[in-house]
Length: 447
Image (cartoon, rainbow, N blue to C red):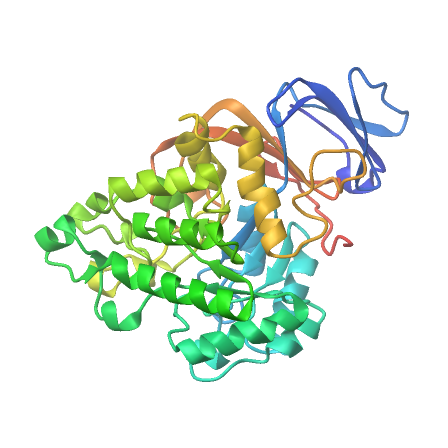
């Protein structure tokens, strides 16, 4: 794929020989940020830029319900700009930014700041997630209504990194967000069961002498909160599901028709707790890496729709916070630039999902849960041209020094992964081309 055009000046764009959802190759015409025509051998207009897709897979732009952009407060680890760059390079056109910033995103003022920073960057749509409780301390509800009414129009609320462990407070939060069709995204961890926890409770943690993080700590909160959501008829979203038992509980809740959705991270689809054998803190994450049997259940749950979507839990950390002894290292991994490749390896190459399934789990479903009207739309005439082109024949080796994030804590360093994002388009404007950020990208692209 090659192109010499000035993308920010273009009105029309013709994608030649692309395969929507990995199916038959067609041409796709984009006018004024919208898909205008799909067909074979479309004739380019005089003022139209033509991009040869070379048979690459065309998908709706990816949507990530769970990223940590660290700004404001921890710009040493990540900023909205660097996180947006990583997202665009990974094929994302929208991300939801978690509120564990400093100050906490628990007021209209802070979520509006994050929203404006995303607009100024203009690479992906940045949607702030508001904290459920003041300071994420779990003691009193934050300004949920004010954040929902702000210019950021927050619809997802979470204390991620901390569990809303008080059941009465969780019930009130679930009731409150019904007024504006919001959703509570719960970090499911019963804190009294994870005091000092360092690794999945099991054979590996016992052998390494690390305090175990039991599966029951996650499963108990999910069971409680699905009951609460059903009781008040509200929407619950379960963050980073990691155990086979959690999948069973969510499946049972959905069978009853309760409004429950769930996500799984790429690393929980691929990596197991035995990677901690040499105490490398890059593999320390919350919830912890689990066992091969948990991975099998998570993959099956994602394939059958019990788990609605993939979310990266992109968690950048400075070298000071991550490159230390295991016990004092911060939990978390980078994920934006590797997510699609990991899903290809774990779900597509295994036959568990086809490309339409990937588009649903990584675009349509998270957009639906986050209540985004113009993201996750199908590749069809009239849809916003939020798109990603993927070379499904390519492989690439992860080099942490080459990643866009300010941090370097990727668990995939030196690993060769399948599939390469070659282009990303936000409302018809190229943010990534030939696998690189487009120079001169106009910030603040209109929504």
